[in-house]
Amino acid sequence: MRRLKLDQLQTFLVVARFKSVSKAADALCVTQPAVTSRIKALEESIGSALFERDAKGMRLTKRGGLLVHYAEQFQNLSDLVEERVVDAGAVDHLMRLGASETIAQSWLPDFIGALRAKFPLLKIEISVDISLNLREQLLGHEIDLAILLGPISDFTVDNVVLPDVPLAWFRAPGVAADDQVNLAEIPIATYAKHTRPYRDLRSAMFERYGPEVSLFPSSSLSSCFRLVEAGLCVGALPVSLARGAVSSGKLVQFDPGWVPEPLQFSASYVGEPRNHVVEAAAEIARGIALKGI
Image (cartoon, rainbow, N blue to C red; front, top):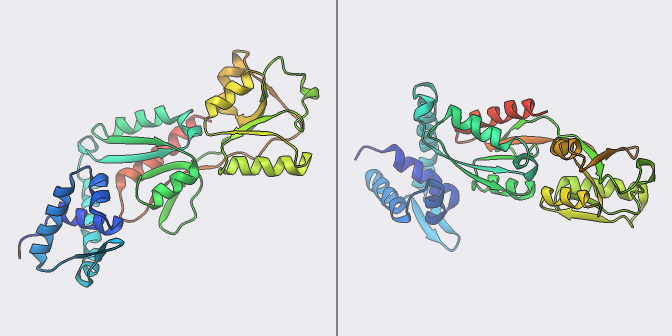
């Protein structure tokens, strides 16, 4: 039997996870022929087929299923050696990061800077999306770390809880005096549909003002702020993102007697197989978020 190679075992695990050579190639940042070649070489070393193709993609054979447990042990041991022996400056992995727009608009640049300071050779891919989509991407192994409205309730996911993000009400300076703002009559800019902040605000507004309230949901927080600054609506938006506009006189914070609950975020990642870089990144995110309060 030929000696097993770590890259072959890693590729095997990724193909087993995605049930697809093409998706595994994308995740590993290699070509499809390279993935096929590694699997073929591993099968020749073991002397048995590890996958069968069917209508749903690549399916593990009985021997392939047996190999998964041992391949994960190899990968965990490799990760442990890299964490405790290899200098952080030499780690050159790809990390696929997903972040909600609230984070992208606030402390994401500081986080990326701190992450690159610890792992200078780390390659980072960033996608910004609503938390619902980020959750699905994380569970589908399309991203490695999701900074989103959380935590994620799934036994495969580890969550590092981040500081809450307070919300407040904002209006343009010339809209009306605070005591004249009637939330039942003026449109309200808020987060996109299919998000927790939108659902919570809609529920709270219904309880207080009935079903006729007008919401302006948007997937772009910057658009929400522009609409409010233009005097077209008011908004229940993150305090941290409004500070600059308030200090420059573009927005005024007001109090109608209640505010929506703060937003809770988490830095979430799939716990197995272990990845010390992603674990470190989640803790760095927590530290940066604490500084940004």
